[in-house]
Length: 570
Image 1 (cartoon, rainbow, N blue to C red):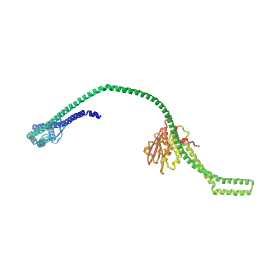
Image 2: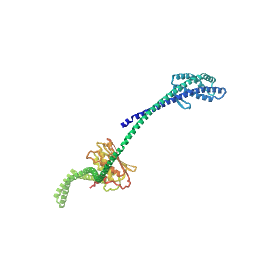
Image 3: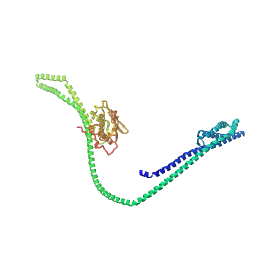
Image 4: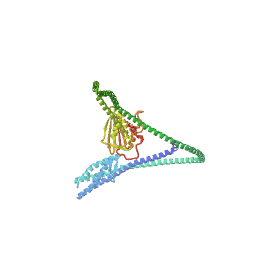
């Protein structure tokens, strides 16, 4: 690139100089032409002042004649006013420079006079014009008839000073014409000089082009001599390249066959790997189910263990009381036997023993204790029965189709199942609408409630925990909101929490599939689940499912079955 620039340096310099000369002449011509236009306007307007001065005198005489003849002076008076205005603003423009009315009654910019002599003549013209202006103003301002003394004063002043005013304006016009002529000559010289310089540069440029063309002709001749040799050499190279290309094509054909074999092997491996990944995903989902199942079973075991413990304690206590009752029965049987045999000595003895046992039972309050134990044991068994019923309602193993379910009943069953997780962490606040029913798979919906309530409890790390559950029906949708005042979810995690295997819990405490399964279940119900969270304030999950499902062929897949649905109460 640099070699080419060096090669054509002289031509580039010549072209650049040619363009610079032309542009310089063009710029100077444009500037000078603009000034000449302004000067021409000034000359034209200065020349017009002589005509206007004569017209002023003419209209004064017309007014005087018309008024003497008793005719209307309105028309010459109007012409005098217009002529007066144009003359006044033009003479001020020659002094100060401003926009004035041109010859075609369009506004033009009038530049002030510049030479000292013109300024002196202009000041003399003002000495004549200013008094004349006041006299003319009285004539123009008169209504219907001009006072004779004002009209006579204006006519006499005009007759006396008009020639002098004309002479002064002629001098100013001559000065402007001289200035215009000087600038025209200057512009002409500049243009001629520029044209001469451009012609000289053009001939220099032409000389360089001719010399360069001759040099290129010589180079072309030298290239022509070697062209056949170069073509022959290039032909041999192309033949060698063609042979190499054939060999390459053969190699590519062989590689293509090997690639096809590898592709078939790769497809088989991909299928095998896909099957392995599906199995791994199934195992992970099963692990998530078993983890939830373990939590639920642990909670239920604790809930069942409490009433079962005091039932066992009561039974053990009644076994001790059974000895005293058995003694009472035994003595009663002996007393009956003595009565049958009329053994009076033994009757008194058995009466005394029976009275002693009765006294002991009354003093130890055994009868009341046995009654209380029986009542408490029945209460405990009722509690266990309630847990089993709620567990059955929670799992609903026999429900394989959509059915209308009471959303509140599902939530209450879930809360009872998860009570062991919640009771030491948070207070549950229910804000239920009067009735909320929806067509759904209740067991799978219960799994969603269980996951959300468990997550809410685990997010609370302080003693004033609250889990708020609110339901309502809006536009044909059952809306369930589960809120907590826990630690919240960071903003950067909100878009990831429904992704499989994403979890913020420590290693070993979560698979990251809980919310993913919830999302799949709600999606299969043709609903939506959304989350709002603020760190340090809490989190709200909002579920919306149709109260009536549109009949479709798709069903909730087995991979999102509730872990609780695998429980079967004994």
